[in-house]
Image: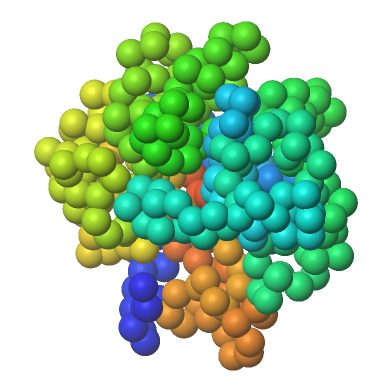
Length: 352
């Protein structure tokens, strides 16, 4: 979403006024005096996503929560990848022994070509190494290609607890169930595995919030009685696959009240909360907290005049974009650069 010339200053002024009036996280039951910074797949602006190094860096720079995306292996183990198709994030193409696994599948109504986690055992995936998903925009991260293994959900649970002890502060887990309807359709449902992991590790509501774009998946988790906060992610177009609703309908006051029956959060695209959109106010009125996604520093991902002259991979005015959203009153930001978000929050968020 581009911001028209002159509109940016108006939005920033409105955000500053909102910050002065109230502390949004506290006013809406957040129990915190400042918005959360969520490390989106760790700190993938600086390290390849979903690696131990990415999560460790996110924790070191002050991220409140760490986000692992969950998919399943053929033997039913939850592993951490952005998608079940792994040719963009691992070196699977270089493994001659797995060339026969290359195939095409229809995932949530879209044909996808490559290699898929459900066609591998955990032991087989353990022979692969991660690579940078966006090598053109984040060429600096390619120096880490081939160094890190694929993590399981259990690995990330254990790592997050070690990081919390190291940094002497709480660090939450924010797992996302990826394509849960698809995985149910092939006999590898994600929800029972998540429930098992939560119970085995005694993850409580202060330590873990679970997200998905699919309401049916979140309702299954709610029915399991785990007592964890749930986060309904919202796409920008269409609707959650396999459901008879749309994201536009889910963003209405009636739709938000329906979400509030099973979830505590919504996660809209960052542009969806900008004025004149009423989404932020409507969600808070429904008793929901709002975590906007995805904040990045590169010009390619910034809107309007937050971009600066230069190449798509060069950094624009990321601090200005954070200041705008913190000022408007979002309760969390999901970011590839948690270090920048923490610095921006220190300069804009109420601290008393």
